Amino acid sequence: MILTLVESACRPLDISRPAPVLHAVPDASCATHELAMLLGDRWSMLVLIELSDHGVQRSADLRRAVNGISQKVLTSCVRRLESRGLVDRQVEATVPVSVMYALTPLGHSLFSAFDGLRRWADDHVEQLHAHL
Picture (cartoon, rainbow, N blue to C red):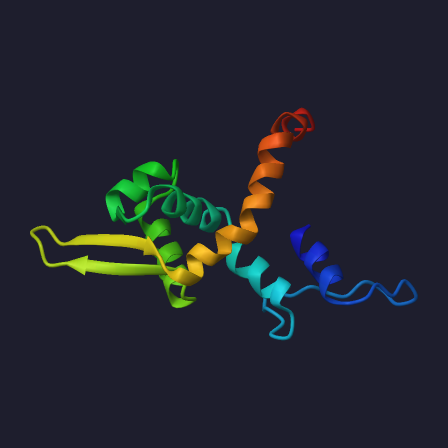
């Protein structure tokens, strides 16, 4: 569903042609598609929201805060977000080793745009649940 919306946001709608086939590979020419591919999974936005709301967090604390995420999925998620410049990972040489995560300036800049969507979700959560 989100890919269909993203596809239409990137290209003008031409009803004379069949709908395009959507692929899991991001279209490098469309920033909206790129963002949807990065944040459209189950956990990425939840991890980013937690880091935005509570600042720097240890890996274990972040896992507890993002209800239901496994350590393996959390590690994969933050590594992907780190590779895209949204999350910073710091390893502290303690026993045991402590890993800390924080938003980068780029990650923080995402939330100025995301705040409107969060307000919309807060205002309409009951209506969304009514349609489940």
